[in-house]
Structures are given as structure tokens and as C-alpha cells.
Image 1 (spheres, helix red, strand yellow):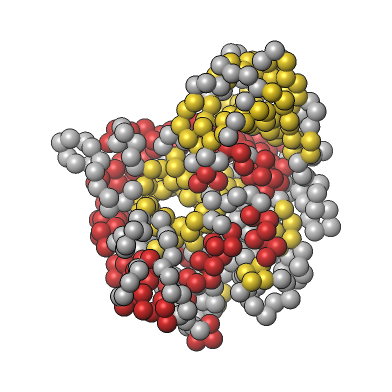
Image 2 (cartoon, rainbow, N blue to C red):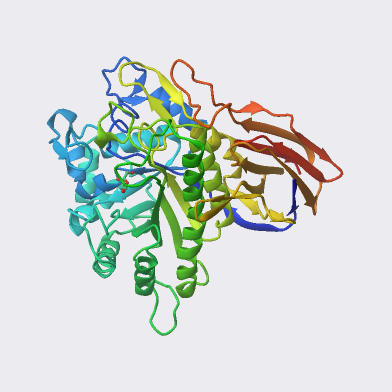
Amino acid sequence: MTIEAVINLDLGGPRISRHLYGHFAEHLGRCVYGGFYVGEDSGIPNEGGIRLDVVDALRALDIPNLRWPGGCFADEYHWRDGIGPRASRPAMVNTHWGGVEENNHFGTHEFMALCELLGAEPYISGNVGSGTVREMSEWVEYLTRDGDSPMARLRRANGRDEPWRVRFWGLGNEAWGCGGAMTAEQYAYEARRYGTYCRDHGDNRLYKIAAGANAGDYAWTETLMKQLAHLGCRRVTSTMYHALSLHYYTVTGPSWDEKGSATVFDTGDYYATMVAAARVEELIAGHAAVMDCYDPGRSVGLVLDEWGTWFDVEPGTDPGFLYQQNTLRDALVASVHFDVFHRHAGRLVMANIAQTVNVLQAMILTDPDSEAMVLTPTYHVFAMNRGHQDATALRVDLRSAPPSRPVGDATLTTVSMSASRRDGRLLVSLSNLDATEPADVEIDLRGGAVAGAEALILTSGALQDHNTPRSPSVVAPRPYDGVSLAGGTLRVHLPAHSFVTVSGAL
Ligand code: AHR
């Protein structure tokens, strides 16, 4: 069966913010220590302790922002413990993640240096759960205050004269859970207080992100939106916070303790994962619909600042470190998420995969005992989709019902697509989620002419295939010739379990 679709090249939709390709680094397991940061005395090439191989690999993805220091860790992080000479920084226990000692050697200055090396904007998650309004407001002052002030003097005493620019600021994390176990009403009150005292210094403008809902908790979103709205006129004018976050992980398995292995799974497990991944569309649309009731002009952003697969940890690794391998299945989870993000780019302003290195659905896996570094299948999806960043979304309208499969009580649509245009180029992303059947797609390109069609494919013999230091390119993009362009029609053959991108000149 051929799937027929139409793309109107001249009917652009919303801009796909580059921040939909954002990242997340928490003090968790080997994400920061061993992942991003090895210390200045390490034999691994580094700048100020930051791993240069990891930086180079991420620069190739044009990563737009990096969220830090958590996650759950953010709500027990006290920023003053992470400044000044490293040897005199107090240690603490990382109670959420393995109960290990955190020596605070990677703190504010190291994080900002990392962002500068990456060319990425910082997204700092402040501590609402166990911190104070004063602590958070002084952190903002320390980072962004020009001229003379107590915190600007302290920053200068620690070696940084110029203020940094910091736009994205999180008011806590998962306030309904590890961030304080609050009700929506309690948190709304706290967000108002913290939001009020996080000031704009000089010309630095904060974009404050309130800790939002878990998955389908629409009541949480409604409570935060109601607070922003002027009663009576239902119009949002407040700047206490500019966006709400949302967290949704792709998790399956009978219980939280049996989520299943990242690499050992059968076709049934695979389809269950893809159904769970596709649910992100229902959730984004659901939260956006609640927000539309209070903010039809879409001035408040939705930020999916944690997403990705969450499987059981690799055998023999610390359960508190959340280290998992990454297969072709993860790549397809990512490609489906991006199609959804592109479709909802009118409300969704940022998304951050959890997490960038060595934790959950990582881009990069480093070896604890050597310099080895592996780029995961998920990394390659980010690379292949890079051209969608800051592009204009184009709708992909289907002429015929898309192929689907029953999966338990659900139905999985097995072909997923999205498209955009930027800088005189069209980029189309296509995923075939079917484990065994190929699919053919025929796209009528209207309202413009496309010249040339260059394609890349990411697939492999088995869904379980993954990359290791010994075999780093089992799942890697390759040039693809299963594509043709003639008379304004783009034809793409999609092998089973594959991700393909096609680009052409407009
Ligand atoms: O990403 C791992 C954890 O998942 C984060 O710390 C927390 O916010 C979420 O529950």
C-alpha cells in the first residue's frame, strides 16, 4: 500500500523553535561527573575539566540549550556550595541518586563555561523545594547583575568580571513530587513568590518556567494558568512566569521496578514502547487545550523539559545512576517525538531530552574506565533533524488513512512524518515504526518547486541493535537511494523500522 500525502510548500505554519532540540544534564550518575566533567587533572583532553570530545560531538548537533542542575537534584542544590576554590567547596549527599557524595566541583562557573563551549543557552533550574526565595534571587543577581552589587562583587571575587546572560530560569522541578510534594495550589503560591523576586538585572531578561504537570495531570496546568489570568477578562498579562513545564517519559512494563531492558526486548515490547511514545501527542495537545482556554493568544509557553525512554538500568550498574543502553528503538521514539513537537510548535516552545550523557535516553555514552565514547542511535536522530531547528513548520496532510497496527487496547499509527523549510531548503522526516513491513510514501509537493532530493537513512538489521566502543557504528546514518523526485512528487520507500530524512532545494 502506498501512503499518499500533500505538503503545501507555500503554506507555512509556526516556527519550530530550535529549543525543541534542547538538552538536560543533572547531577545524576555519570552525567556530569565522568560525562561532561572529568576534572582538570584527567588524562582525557579537557578544558577546565570539561571533556572536549563530548563538547565536539554535541556542537555537531547545534544543541540550543542545556538544563541544569536537575531534575530532582535541583531542589536540594544550594548554589553557594558550588562557587569559589574547589578544594574548599562543601560536599553534600545526593540523596535522590545513589546516595553518593557530591563534592560540588562542578558548579555555576563550570556550568556556564560548559554552555559557552557548547554554544548553548543555559537553562537553570532553581531550588524551590528546599531553598529560599532569597537564595534563588541572589543566584540570579550573581549570574546576571552588571555594575556594583553584593552578588556581582562575589562573582568578580571568584574570577568572572562580566555578567553572564541567562534567559531560561526554572522555578523548581516536579513540585508535585521530588520538588516538594506540593498540591497545585501550594505550588502556584510558591511560583508566584519565587517568580516575583527573580529579577531582570540590566538588560538580561528572564524567561521564567514554572514547574508543571506530570503527564496527564491537566488540573495542575489549569491551576497555574488560572493564576496567571486576570479574573473576568481571562487574559494572561502576568510575568511571574512565562511558561509551564510538562514531564513525560516513555515507560512500559508491568511495574516501575520492571520497566524492561533497554536492549533485550521482543516485538511486543517494542510496539508497547512505541504506543507509549506516541502518547506524547495526546498530552501536549491536552495541556495546550487547557492553556488555550486562558491564553488564546499563546503568550505562555509549554516546555516539555523532560522526555525520553526510561528502562531498567544496565545489569551490574548502580540502580540510582539510571544508566541504560540505547537502540534503534530509542531512535524511533525520538523521531516520533520530534514529529509531534513540530506539529505543536505553536504552543510548545522548548523540549529537553533526559538526559544528554550516560543517563536514560542519552546521546552519548562514555566509558567509566577509558576515554571511549559512543554516539547513540538517538544522537543520530538529533543530527539528521538538525535542519528543522528554527525552520517554518509545513503540514503533512494525508490523503489516505495511515497504516496502523492494533497493540493491546491501542492502535499504533506506523508511519510518522513531519516537514519544514528553512534557508531555501525543504526537510522531510519520515519514520516507519513497523517492525517487519516496509512502507511506501508518495508526497505531492505543491506551491513550489523542489530541486534534488538527498536522503539519509537510519536503520539496522534488528531493533535491538546498538553502538558500543568496539562497534560504534552499528546504527549510524547512511546515504539512501530509496527516494525519487519527479514532476513535483516525492516518492520514498521506507524499510521496516527505519528513519529517513529527505532534503531538497526550494
Ligand atoms: O531525569 C531523571 C528524573 O526524572 C529527574 O530528576 C526528575 O525530574 C524526573 O522524575
